[in-house]
Amino acid sequence: MNVIRFTDLCAQGKVAGQRVFIRADLNVPQDDTGRITEDTRIRASVPCIQQALAAGAAVMVTSHLGRPTEGEFKPEDSLAPVAARLAELLGREVPLVANWVDGVDVKPGNVVLLENCRVNKGEKKNDPALAKKMAALCDIYVNDAFGTAHRAEGTTYGIAEYAKIASAGPLLAAEIDAITRALATPKRPLVAIVAGSKVSTKLTILKSLAEKVDQLIVGGGIANTFMLAAGLPIGKSLAEPDLLDQAKAVIEAMRARGAAVPIPVDVVTAKAFAADAPATVKAATDVAADDLILDIGPKTAAQLAAQLREAGTIVWNGPVGVFEFDAFANGTKVIAEAIAASPAFSIAGGGDTLAAIAKYGIESKVGYISTGGGAFLEILEGKTLPAFEILTRRAAAQ
Image (cartoon, rainbow, N blue to C red):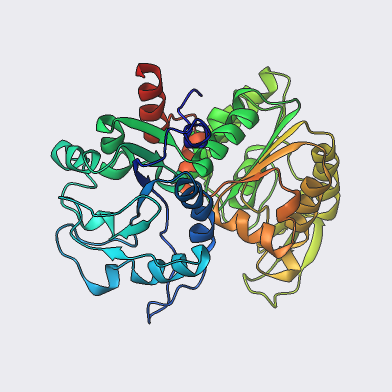
């Protein structure tokens, strides 16, 4: 994917003295008092800001936070806690600027944080008048917010249309490179793990991947629907019987290509959905009418782990069982450890997947951990993200 990279602009000496507008993803969780409870996204935004400052730019950074009402700023919408954390990470003052659309005063070598961009009228609908005003604030626009790359908004798309130069920040560029490596030019075999509670929410992803991958591992409630499609009993497990034809179509599409959707040979069941429910390992053919399937069994986990160790590329979205309950976590643990041990290039994304990666401490052994939930899923669906599309178009025109 051909885009102008901000890192290259810095290396070429094109950033010194320029006004740089960075769209970051600083949408972090907060408690009731406004205290930031998890700052990964802020920390991930720091390299781009440091790069711009080191290159001698006058730096403006903005992001959305929460779901504010456009045109109605409330104290809880403020990026003030983010500005404070950013100042700690950068080791310098980060002034917070409100009502910034009509002008920003920042000198080369300094950085300011522009207040919550979603408070501006026209941001979500990508109003051209707003986009042009924002573009006039800068010489170089940098999109470093993969988490919002699937939204065509004022600060993610419109400003990129009208800015003198529109570029991809290091975080966004790394996502582009990892996704290209995993899906556009993968080393084979390409194995995808797609898990979740419902087939319906991931049906387009399953169909898209069925045309690309060599093994499509399904987990969670999705696996139950596929087991039902394969004629296996699932008791009272979560499933979508009305989507059996769709599941069968995915199995057939894979089979026609000489690929496969591995169906569990054993499962871990319980009589109730609870952390302290007694867990029973059963053959997939022996699930009782009052059983809930809450994890894949040890034989299935071992088979899948063997496939993952032989993979060339792994795409992971979703734990394969109720890993939050220790009695039903073994399947996800074995999968995670197999991905960590595999020589394959791996890319993982989605909130539950990141939680599993953290639980099993394999962060350093996953090739690339995607920062965007919805954006990552849309990539797996085969969609072109608006942020990628506009940056590619601008690169071709410049």
